[in-house]
Image 1 (cartoon, helix red, strand yellow):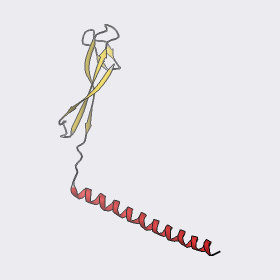
Image 2 (cartoon, helix red, strand yellow):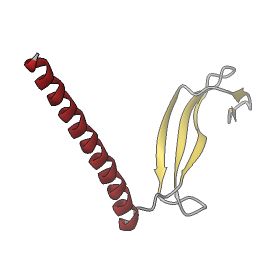
Image 3 (cartoon, helix red, strand yellow):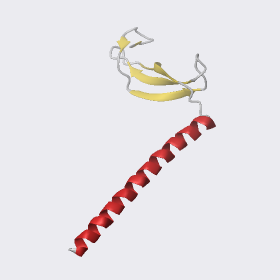
Length: 101
């Protein structure tokens, strides 16, 4: 909740909100400040105030982590390929058995 600068009435809900990105927060990571446009229900004054600040931890992208992820994906794809080849072989065997009957 924010207070009206003219009469001091507490206003709960903003009319409109928008993000204001900031470069660095207190912890060194990026943070985003959300601003709001409020209207006082008592004196009808409109004013802006900060609604909330969200801290976004800085994601570290390293080549080593990327290589590990790619290796994991490659292993999964190779296993899928192996399973598909086995299923194709089984289906071909079943087809030849059906055709021979």
